[in-house]
Each structure stands twice: as structure tokens, then as C-alpha cells.
Image (cartoon, rainbow, N blue to C red; front, side, top):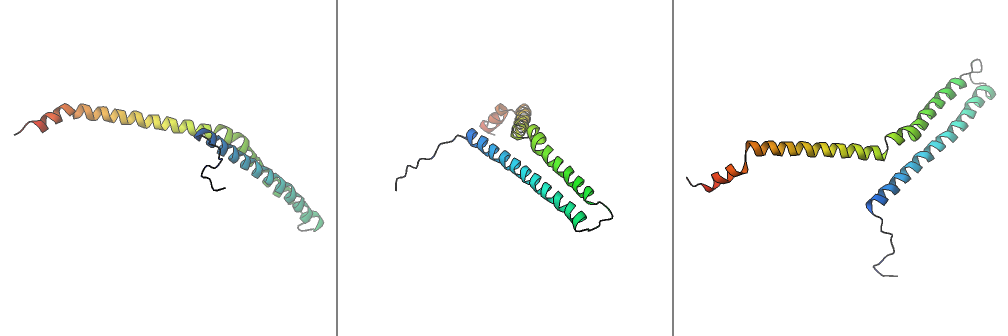
Length: 131
């Protein structure tokens, strides 16, 4: 009961990252399905308001509302299933690794430039030679 050894699973960093990525994807898909349900219910209400309650009955404006909302839903679906597949965590990781490699290369070039302009052997000689 009061022991210090709790039975917690030891997850390494990669497993933890995979778990977080999976949870984020589940949340994205859950929001998409919720958006779909709200879209269906909202579409029915738009038709009811226009046809049953006769609000603006001379013109079928609900068609434009449903069309615009369907367009937004398609964009949301595209973002979840297509964009995230190409620009997801793997893409971010590869971009980060490319930038780090580029920075390391630049730092190495600067260090070589400094060493050629100001060699350490000349600096050490100047410090050792008394005037």
C-alpha cells in the first residue's frame, strides 16, 4: 500500500511518441465524425426552417447553406486523411533532421574557417613568448 515501487509500465521515448501520435489521430478522426453528424443534423434543420417554417420560402436558400457546409466538411476530411498522411509526424521528423544536419554542416564550415584564419598554434605561441 505504501511501497515506493509502483507498477508503472516503463515506456521508452519512441513508444511514448507513437502513443501520443495515435491519440492525436484518434482525436482528429473523432472530431471529423462529430463534424459529419452536426452537418447532417444542421442540414435537416436548414431544410425544416426553409420548407416547414416557411422562412424565406420563395427561395430555396438551404441549398446554398448545405453546399457551403459540405465544402467545409470536404476540406476537413481532406485535411484529416490526406494532408496529415503526407505532412504528419514522419514528415515533421524528416524536416527537423534535415535542418539539424544543415545547421551542423554550417557550424563545421564556420569552425574550419575560424581555424584557418586563426590557427591555435599561432595563438599558443604568442601566449608563451614573453616580450
